[in-house]
Length: 161
Ligand code: FES
Ligand code: FES
Image 1 (cartoon, rainbow, N blue to C red):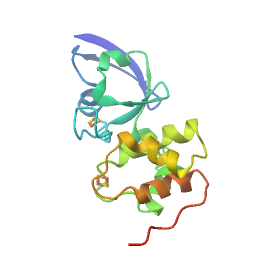
Image 2 (cartoon, rainbow, N blue to C red):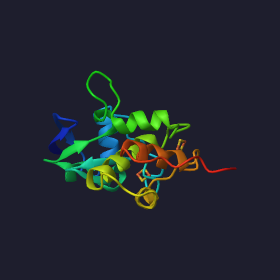
Image 3 (cartoon, rainbow, N blue to C red):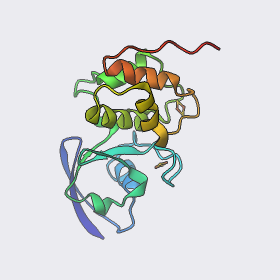
């Protein structure tokens, strides 16, 4: 067992973990931050996307001990303390960028990382950036629209059926 200390959503936490504790398990079970979802555990779905020292990471691909000393952001830290949604979260709501919601935390975290690095991405850049995040419900179009709206850009119309 190893003691790890990290800053999670602005709060310093210290816990003792096994060497093979995944970051997903650490967040969900040790810290009870269950917004980070586990869809595949094999680095394919993106539902577990978090930020580690400002970089987008799939939490199922790292051990908690690797995050020792790091700054972690999860979906729980995206809204303001009073519950006001971030601009991205509000755009997902407004543009119906979710249905069942399972992929949504990962989508929002991936999109937040994109907009931080590229505040006005093209539609193609948004779609390319989301390649590692799978959604089984929406068909992606409204997710892309929400991200473009959150970046302050023109939102493409819904494609004709
Ligand atoms: Fe991590 Fe699917 S649970 S990528
Ligand atoms: Fe259901 Fe994306 S909204 S998986």
